[in-house]
Structure formats: structure tokens, C-alpha cells
Image (cartoon, rainbow, N blue to C red):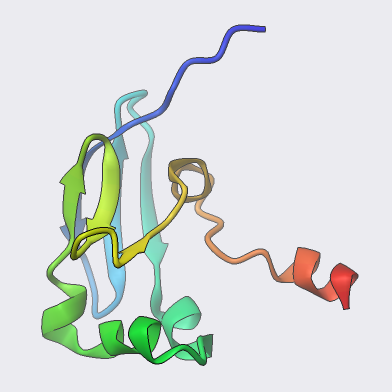
Length: 93
């Protein structure tokens, strides 16, 4: 099985909590992080509801990162535009 890594090449903010993310395979996704941030109970995650803090993202080594990896998401989840796995959580309950 051949595995070709997918990397993020660019990210730009398109809304309050939305980012346009471009990947090296030419895929482009508009990912809305708002529901994830608002649903979180963790204060370190909810801190990114502050607009200045959310806007502080950067692309490092092909990954989308806030701070020093304070907040990050698996690249494959961003590529699929599926950062929440609510169906998996429901099955586990």
C-alpha cells in the first residue's frame, strides 16, 4: 500500500471562524471551526473564540497550527472537512 502524505500549503480566514485551506493535492476546503469551538467545554479551546486569537493561525510543516501546537487538527480531517466526529462519539455512548 502506497501512502502519499497530504500537506496544507495555505490558509486564509474567510469568516469569523472559517478558513479556506489549500492542500498540495489541489483540494480546497472551507472549514468552519465555529461549531467545534462553541461546543467545547475546555477553556483552552474556547479561548480561540476570541477573534484575535483565532486569527493567529499559521501553516507549519504542512499543518494548520495555533500557538505552539496549542490547537491543531489532523490534516486528513481538514482535507475531508470533517473536524468533529459526533457520530463516533454517539456510538461510544
